[in-house]
Amino acid sequence: AQSVTQLGSHVSVSEGALVLLRCNYSSSVPPYLFWYVQYPNQGLQLLLKYTSAATLVKGINGFEAEFKKSETSFHLTKPSAHMSDAAEYFCAVSSGAGSYQLTFGKGTKLSVIP
Amino acid sequence: EAGVAQSPRYKIIEKRQSVAFWCNPISGHATLYWYQQILGQGPKLLIQFQNNGVVDDSQLPKDRFSAERLKGVDSTLKIQPAKLEDSAVYLCASSPRGGSETTEAFFGQGTRLTVV
Image (tube, each protein chain N blue to C red):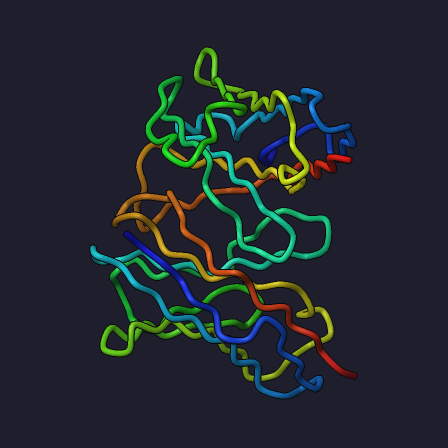
């Protein structure tokens, strides 16, 4: 069984500040891990994914995440927040390598303060 | 490349009525997923199809929910009868057969269902 815990349902940062969204996972098999972004009234868009290759994964819009097996974490970061980053972010784990049957966290809503 | 298409975008029904949602995946994608996203929560998988066969429907409330994917292309999710707690966004996603480092699942914009 898999599960995902996202710490903080709501995070606020100032424009230009570091963005850090936390995600911890539990998986009985080597996981694929994902971060998705959801803008209001939109579907989910993939930001980045970890698939057992490099532990530091770079995604779109300047986001990156680091897979830390010892900490079972996959935190999302961006050095400098932009107003357009305001959205809801979901961390997800797959049911097994090569699968896109996903278990999602509850999401973190990111607000960017001008 | 056209994305995953869903319709309708919004639907309001009374409890005990029935409703159906439609999804057309990206052309050539063998795998199709339906997720339920209740307000304030992450999406939850309801059912996964591989071509026109069901891979996993363990979280589908089968007493009221049904889904089909005739001919292995578009899919329909039905709720009959609807309950208040079915109010949610229903997301459809598709991916190429299997999964690998070079593939991903693509999501549609969803259907927002309100049961009153």
